[in-house]
Length: 229
Image 1 (cartoon, helix red, strand yellow):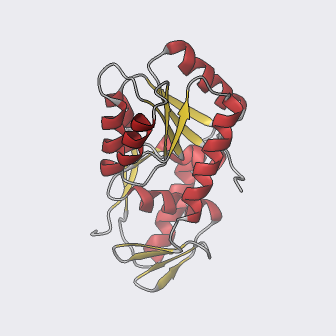
Image 2: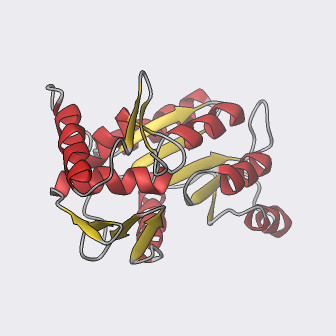
């Protein structure tokens, strides 16, 4: 069951269709980013954290199948891909699934069905998460929402655990500030710099457990883990 707003990347070069999808997702209080080209889509997936990528097959620079393959091979975390296309032949769908697509929706489609499929894909991704995540000497116990550094417990707040989890998912890449803001507060982040305070507190708790300088700040980008010190 999805209990939070989702972060969706809409990869669609047709401006009217893209606007309709983004406006609909915004109405659900989901975060929706838009890429009108395959190159931009790949770049965003490398830098941001999405629950689902909505991928049109007909793009101006790259074939959608190439973009899907690149996302599946190069993204720092496994993100579900829902292909959107007017191609409804079995052979077209088969090629999409062989390149890693997780689902297929033929145009024209009902936006309500699109939302249901996004929720199903995001839920499936949550179910497939391992109950333990290891990044160097850092261990995250996902079910218990706890962390260990060389078997030493790290005292975490709820926000601290969410931040650390996103960093571990993205490792060795960075997590953007916008992705962390959305993870903590959805579509309504606070106006104050609360994220900076949470990251500072997380750094402090990691240091108390012996993990020194594990969180690296990247100006104008976000944060990443450095498990090698």
